[in-house]
Length: 196
Image (cartoon, rainbow, N blue to C red; front, side, top):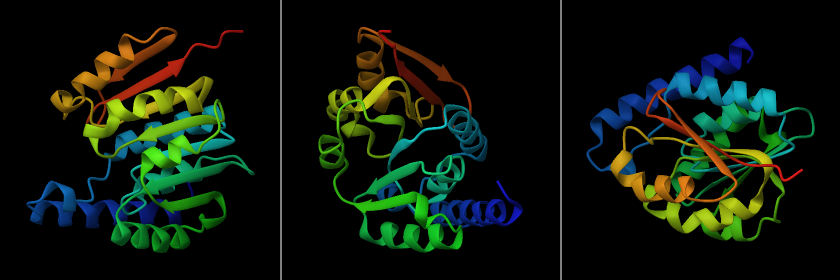
C-alpha cells in the first residue's frame, strides 16, 4: 500500500476508534477491524489475486480500502452496507483513496446482494456485519464462493458467543475447512475444498 493511502487508513482508524469510545450504542459504532487483521486480509488478498470479492459490512470503508488495494488490475470488490450515512462516508473515503474504479459500494440488504450473486463466482468474501444474520447468510455464502475461494469472518474470538452457532454450522459442513486465527478480534478463515 502506498504511503498516502496507508496514512488515510490510519486516519480513518483513529477517527473510528475515537468515535466508538464515545458511542454507547453498538449499532452506531464504526467497529473497524484491527490494523493487524487488515494487514493479514491484505496479504491474503494479494496472494489469492481475486477477480471477484464481496465485503459484507462496509462501515466507513476502512477495511474496504485494505481489500481493494490488494486487488489485481481488473479485479472487482462489491462492498455492501445497509446504513445510508456510513455508505456516504465510504463513498468519500474510497474517492480519497483513489479506489472508486475497483469498488462497487452498494447500499442494500446483504442477503439480497448475496442471493443475486451468481453461484461459484466469488473468490474472496469478507464478513464483518450483523453477527445475528450469519447463520441465515451461510447457504448463500457457500453457494457464491468458488471452490478454493476464501471466506474471512471477523470478531470470532471477541464475540465468540454471538457467532457460536455460525461457527458450529461452518465446522459441520462437508468439504469445508476452517481455522480460527487469533489476530485482532479473531479471524475465522474458511475455504471450500476444490473437488478437482
